[in-house]
Structure formats: structure tokens, C-alpha cells
Length: 241
Image (cartoon, rainbow, N blue to C red; front, top):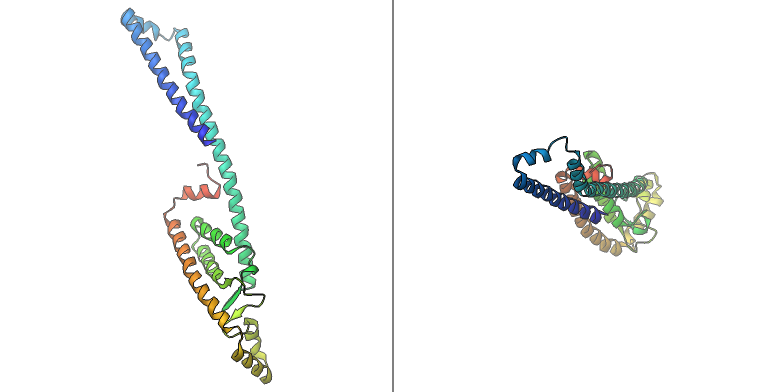
């Protein structure tokens, strides 16, 4: 659609230029044959036939320009609709991920990536773009905090999260009210910790991934500062372009 809009625009201008040249040649021809008085008669407001011919000559070019504008507006409407749909999808992804983090914060734990409501790539892409478009600094801070937590979700962890001590956060919290025997059993579990090597390996993987995530977030923040507001509105799908 953009191609045809541009084509009509170019052809419209070409037609108008040629039409103006043709009119100018006609005026010069009259001047050479009849002199200045002939030109006056030609351009007289009472010479209706001349103006009708002029309008007919210019009309196709004007029509092409009007068609070009119409096609451009239609293309912009289509783009706006697509951008609004994409914005709605991003909002849903971030909302569901934020709700999950709110109810299951992975503090000190490495969890299986399958627990996420969407893939890490989808979540990170949605967050980084929304950071670029967001004007509220507090909202940007909240999204950044949630984004860095993505590194704590890794492949092949299994249903039980991995921790440095070998016990879950829930077990640590419940230990406050545990009896002596329960505390001893918990201490033994920490000492044995069969998943210690797996945790240490995946922790290194998570730390490396965290560096990449932070770089993407920094790039998004920089783009946020540089991008004009009008461009942001276009991406959101609520701009008249």
C-alpha cells in the first residue's frame, strides 16, 4: 500500500509539472502571436472556457495526489491497528509475568524455565520495548527488577527449585518455628545437599545471562531517553503519524 501511495504521489507531481509547462507554453504561444493583449484576453476572468481547460489539464495530477494521501492514511490506520494489537499482547505478557513474580518471587532460588507463563525471550522483549515507551520512572524500575529475575529461570532444573543450601525458601522460613529435632534434620539436609554441584553450575549460567539481560535493559533505557514522544506514540499505535 505504501508503494502505491508513493507511486501515485510521484506521478501526480510529474503530471502537474508537465501540465504547468504545457499551460506556460500555451501562454507564450499566444503572446508571440497576439502580443500582450492576447495574453490579457486569455487570462481574463471572463474567459471561462480557458479556465475549464486549465482545470481539466490539472485535474488528473491533483486526483493522483489525493489518491496518494488516501492510500497513505489507510496504510497508517493499518499500522496503528497492528501496533495496538502488539501493545496489548506485550501488556498481557508483562502482566502475567508480573503476577507470577508477585506470588512466587525466586529470591535465592533457581527455577525451571517451564514455570514461566511465556518464554524468557518473549518476556524480555516485551519488557525492554515497554521500558523504551514508558514515561513513569517507577514503572521502569519495577519492570527492570522483574526482568533481571529472568536469569534465575534455567533449563532442566525440574519441579523443585535449586538453592545454595539445598532447601527451599519455604523450609527456611518454617525453620523459625521448628523443634530441635526438626532443626537437626534440616541441618543434615543442608550438609548433604545432593544438588550443590548442579546449583553452582546453573548459578554461573544465570550470572552470565544476567549480564546480557542488564546490557539489553541499559540499551532500552538509553533508547527511552533518545526516542521522540511522537515515535513512541506511533509504536503504541495511538498516533496520527
